[in-house]
Image 1 (cartoon, one colour):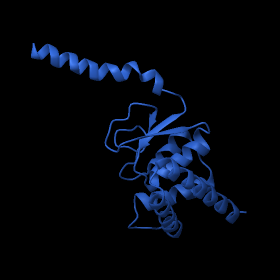
Image 2 (cartoon, helix red, strand yellow; image 1 turned 30 degrees about the vertical axis):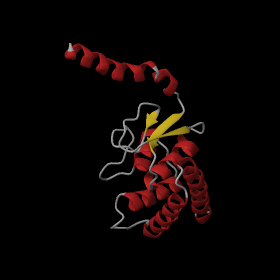
Image 3 (cartoon, helix red, strand yellow; image 1 turned 180 degrees about the vertical axis):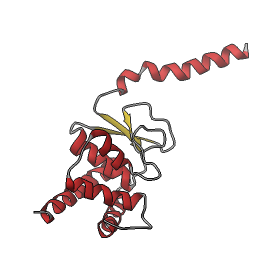
Image 4 (cartoon, rainbow, N blue to C red; image 1 turned 45 degrees about the horizontal axis):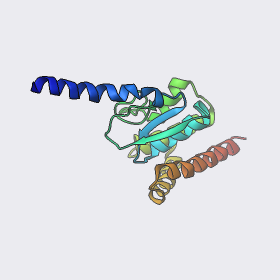
Length: 166
């Protein structure tokens, strides 16, 4: 009897989310953790500005399993950081988003997120990016407000990079 009850509970836990899966398998939904960090903010901006302009974001408690949308920058996500690449870089490569200015920005995100102890090519830019994004994160506990502020910052940063190369 206990086995039947346990099996029933297990099936309910597995199947109930699947029954509602149609609600959260929206084409333009991207899901990540609630705790903002440099790569997560930069990747959200990249998605919204260069991959899917109609993107919307859902936030899960860090460590929970993401069941809706396209997960990114979480350990179990398809698009996540590795020991040698930021999520930002993984997304750029997968979606073939390549412009000279974004490559510079990607290198700065990499150095701020992956190799912050060994700056090389974009050290000064990475330091500035790290300071600014950390300040935005600190000032905005709500992930939605944090992303709004980060999007403005990354838009401005890209604009500055484009001006420098003219």
